[in-house]
Image (tube, rainbow, N blue to C red; front, top):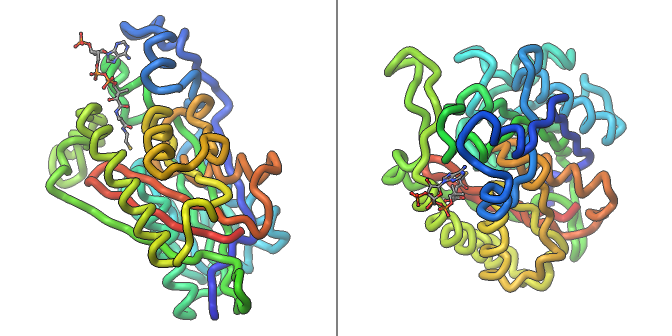
Length: 322
Ligand code: COA
């Protein structure tokens, strides 16, 4: 059976780290409040010369190097972002140019914090139907550019970064095939005003700032994520106990704990980077995945569940054998 197999991962973070204490000097907050409510201790913030496209390129290069292939071997780039370099062209085409891999397919996907899961779903479908052979799936964001730095309820929660995986279409046989085993995606536009940006090309003509009703987002996140994780398990016929690692969207340590509890998954199987990276939106899942691959926790053959929920609302999960 033709499957999309992860042959490399990579990530990139801006140079500058901003601690909670540094934020507390700018807005009315404290390190204690942020750590207790979110688990976040620091975040990376892009300087002027660091963009979504440059971070995405760095993450993509690392994934290509880890896979031991060449940029010209990539014939599909799907980049998930809510903070593109420009309104158009797609940031994926900027990455394609930077990498020097011309002639394939390149486009962006907009599903905010679930963007990487949506991009995985799209790329997997295109690989399995033969439209491409090797796909870079990237999540990259510079949310610092759309934060209201006077609003303490949102500006403390987010950071910048990028993560990437390289997928290759391979024929996989046997009882434990490698690759993406199942992906489930959802959206419920009824909640599109609970987490949004108050600007846009066709409305205000400005980029706008992020606005969020945090408590309501929290409530929906725990329910939606537990449901979609069960849906993916049901599709594959696997159990929670089969999962080696949960790599969740890193929004808030309390959402991660609540989701793991609802799944009956021991906390030591959950990859957590929110303390160091904060919420990097579409970048958070591939950044956390690459972190755990590179530090040796996630090993070839292991079952990894990816999940995310974001503005829209959108949410999804994907089960992958590495
Ligand atoms: N520092 C200090 N106090 C803060 C603060 C900050 N950075 N942000 C908010 N507060 C205050 C509020 O003003 C409020 O004060 P009040 O009671 O005097 O009105 C108090 O803390 C409690 O605020 P509340 O919003 O009820 O806190 P919470 O426990 O719900 O935590 C979030 C807030 C944002 C951390 C939490 O709702 C959350 O994580 N939501 C999900 C957000 C998310 O993950 N979004 C991304 C999804 S992709």
